[in-house]
Amino acid sequence: MPIQNLNASRILHLSKMSANATISHTVFAFLLAILLVNSGIEQELVLTWIASVYLILGIRYYSAKQIIKQNQISIKENNALVTTQIRQQIVILFALSLAWSLSFVFLFMVDIPEHQSGYHMIAAIFTIGLVAAGVLSLGTIRLALIVFSIPMTATVAYLFVNEGDVFHVMSAIATVSGIIFLLTSSVLFSNEFDNGILKTQEIKDTELEIISRLASASEFRDEETGNHILRMSYNCYLLSLECGFDQERAELMRYASSLHDVGKIGIPDTVLLKPGKFNAEERSIMNSHTVIGARILSNSNSKLIKLARTIAAYHHEKVDGTGYPHGLKGEKIPIEARIAAICDVYDALTSVRPYKKAWSKQEALTYIIDNSGSHFDADLVKKFQKIYPKVLEYAKTHSDS
Image 1: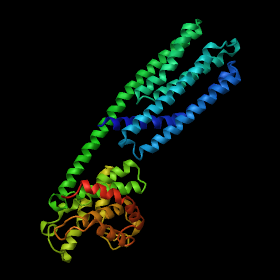
Image 2: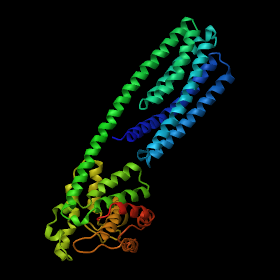
Image 3: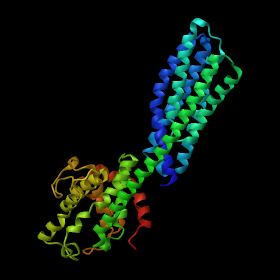
Image 4: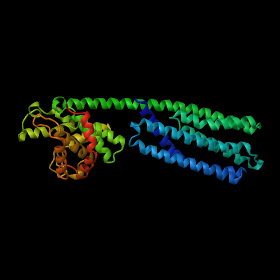
């Protein structure tokens, strides 16, 4: 698995944890501020502290949300973006760690009256709890984990040396021990997380390889289609993104659509490879490849195979209801099948087949536009026109020649 994909998974997990943890940290920081004031620490000092904490938490929450949003579009394909985001999070977390370290300073260096020591102890427990929550949310990125821990560990060590009473010594020992334990736990979690991602990716790669080989098998008997599957499925990917699909869903479309004609495996050569037009019986046999494909791909728990079945079954339906096999109309046809219909017909028209010569790309695009609203979804045709330059660019490097 490419390291940028692993890093992308790490930063995405960190961001999801950060987005959730920031809300709870905001509440706990408020409660800690109240305890600090009740412990005898000056109110102005505490207000300044909590204002800085809230500012950093706000920045952390916003950046985490941006990373989650970007992941849906391009993070897995952009190593520079992943690296930048990791560095950004490290800086934010270092600042947050410094802010929490200040609470240690308040707790350990301020003289607490005897009758207020209870508040002091509760505040110390709150602080350690917040540190624990912070550390446990960082386990996927070890450098962030280390950077987050250094200021707090250094602060506690300094106070350990400079404050000699039993309370401060015991607090320091407990805090350092807790940080070490949490660091160890987080490193173990990081290893398990990486292994889980790698195993998941291995399973996914195996599934995609099987699908790729099955798609090749469906076209093997019809060699003149050449790179039709590659072009058609990539165009489905582009059009899916243009429709607002997130990255994961668009990638599913790319691989699932490659099986759109898997049912051709069950079509006799006398029909599949016939050089002329079909008669009524032959047309009926050829049209049955949608039903055969759906049957081949049925009864699966895989999201990818389920989507492939939908496309195989319905990609020859037309929005005016004159398509096959069920004569569905408009939005009753799944959007994935409507996307595949445009990309399949366009590329089929530009490809050589036993019964026809290849059309020019402009002729094929004109046909798609002319049949907008009858054969094809009108809105999707407009979106296809937007991505058309990318369609042409990909076709240059994946031509049948």
